[in-house]
Image (cartoon, rainbow, N blue to C red; front, side, top):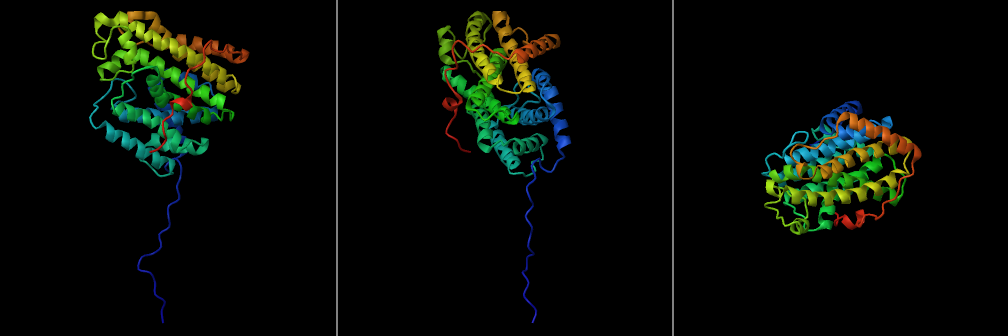
Length: 334
């Protein structure tokens, strides 16, 4: 008597492979090209890391850039694209990110890169979710009322990335270092908001606190009008002043990193801080043309950062940041 066989053969489950099955070298090269095109400032600073850290930083950047472009309808940054169906695009980012973390292919090199660097550096779903929450805030037409609101937004879109970057750098397991990495991301974003305030308004977004606008006699409807640029410059200067607090706090965390890592961080801090200070110094003319830091100026910041990394005695801020990353985190969940 023959033994009954099952009608359906056993199917072996495909083992997850972080990186979506792509070769690491190919993902690194795509990520290098992404940062070279998408962020000239951070590309220069990232070149100062040691090779292993540099490649992981590029892989993480590629995911951040791709998420931002997908949600905002952009191609390597630039003007905001079509904002219809933005909620669906945020959901797509969630799904692709989850697949990448599970080691499943995503058909998108940037998300596969994230799956790879997450497996190498211990990045988690909660960390990714904190960043994606920033895109969800934009989808919900976020408008900050006061200081803490804008800092919470900065935490999600940049501070949480700073925390992941610290993991990528294998930073010391020290909450002070990770708090300061968060501060650095917040400082970068405050500088970006000050630079892009008019461009963002043209896309229907306003990241300046409504209370600050009211203090200057402005509203979310009229703050970018030509006749209001002098008052707008005063509001923007408040952002840059706050940026400098977070910037200086971040230096105190970088002090505990290895030489190459702190050199790169000090350089990035100087370059992004230079953007914010240039906006403040231009006053009402800050938005007549996009503020940029030229290549020679960037090289000057890199050289100054080298001396700073060698001496490695940053001056603590007079006032430490008012809120920690714990204060700015939401209740977690997908």
